[in-house]
Length: 127
Picture (cartoon, rainbow, N blue to C red):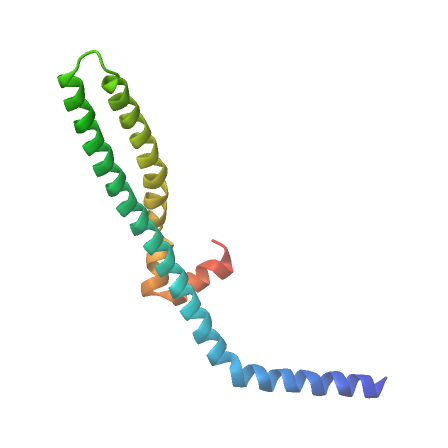
């Protein structure tokens, strides 16, 4: 029984030495990973905003084109096309706008970039 206790104590001493040796590197790498995750989330939010702007411009151009075609020929189906384009464009716009606001409005994404230690504490505590 004494040999088992001595082996356990020696193993715990080895683990303690390893943790003292590698703990600073592990903490630094963890903080870097949290910072990269926050930056990735914010980049996704900005990308969604760019997509929203593109959708808005395409929908606006097609709507103007459809209205001009309808003005040329009142008996054509361009009026329906303009209505469908606005509805479709608005739906796509909202699909990308909601995640953009969620990603950019999340305070912890910004904290992760500028203070990764606080973001780590937030993740560990689960608050």
